[in-house]
Image (cartoon, rainbow, N blue to C red; front, side, top):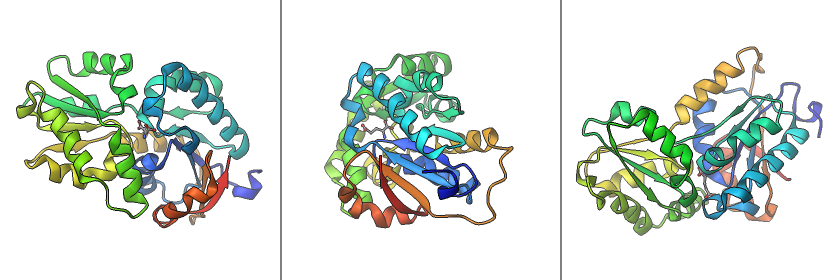
Length: 270
Ligand code: DGL
């Protein structure tokens, strides 16, 4: 695949295990509607949240290296908290283009909370990362940050994007897992620290049963992408985005309608 085949302008590359990165792509498209898009999903590796640090530190840079070689993007966004909190440095040292990571939005949450109690929902791997400890120490040392792993929400979000009804019980359990911790009754802000989770924002808000702010880092990432690509002249019109999977292309069929909403209409296998 050459740049000529995917248009003259280098694309923006988004990377996740599945549909989660669409929550980051959505905010980016609002600011850069005509930027060519390549959306990569490592379905063969989903779920990252159950993998070891060593496995992800090797797998993510290797895949991104292949993607960059094939699509020659201007910039790569790791639209996955698990991959970013573990492998961002490894990816940056392996690639010679700008790499934007997606890390738990502890800083904005700390500024928003009025009660001083923040919940953090992520994958099993994300919530145990030293990266998260550092964010909490740097930006929320005077707050209580309750962490809960909600790996089932990844599958609920995948189901929703296939047009199925997500499992409401797992959504309820995710919220309960925070509320039941000490201080949970005062929690007013929940960080969605997995890119799949903002796709279930309405369902999570309903399960909470009292007003809470659900926040993620997607808008900040979109602004960062705009800044890092400010010297690029984007096309006057948008072209069809490319979806590329490490899994079986046939498995993507149920997601095609959802991807169409993001301007993605070409499907390829890595
Ligand atoms: N969307 C990914 C994240 O932000 C995780 C999904 C998975 O476990 O593969 O952490």
